[in-house]
Length: 258
Image (tube, rainbow, N blue to C red; front, side, top):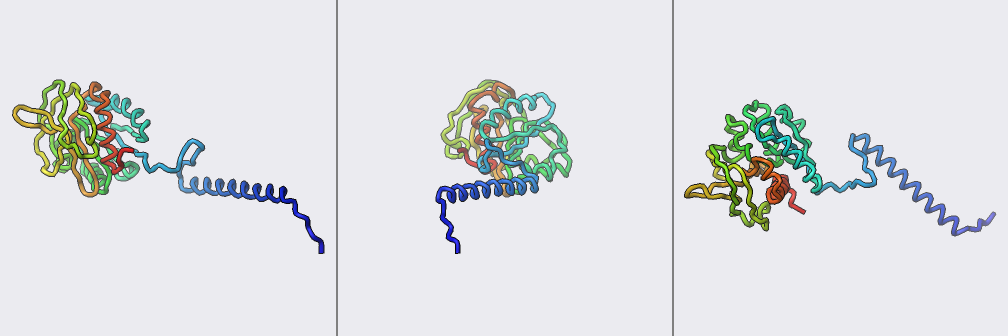
């Protein structure tokens, strides 16, 4: 019988080579598996841990509030905070097949009509546990849909204009806790048809009473946020408003701020 003399250095190199080859094989198999699922492959600069990232759908229109311009301002800002925003002006995109891709929906529009299928898709989206982030004119979007008005929590009635600082009354809520109040020029919305289960976070003085500016509510398994702030770039470019919207997105989608 021949006795083989071992070269420990060569054996070590062989073991390292087999481990390296094995790792490469696993990476190739993983890439093939990911490709078979239709998922994007991970690059060296990406991470598979996306638990803190969010995907948001933004519904606007071609109306006087110029939501496309506001979206252009919001998208890069949120991207830096791991929140991806996709903008559309098509009501046809309010369908179950499309909405299932997203964690939340921003509405900043003056759309008048919504058909029954679109209304159902929106309500099902929120009831299933997704977030609705409604901004400014969203409270007079779809004014003939009583189910949408109830979902939002109230309906726009009239407004004036001016610079004001909303007072925070929901000081222990995750959206407003520790956040400084901010002043901006905006339209001073007054609402009607309030839903009694709304939790008011911010108010401003209107005559002899406090008019709600920002509130939240729950709908099924989902969460709804609304703020009357947001008429134009003077508010959208205000860092206080930007922080409010980021926190609203995270809360509505069930993802606390990091």
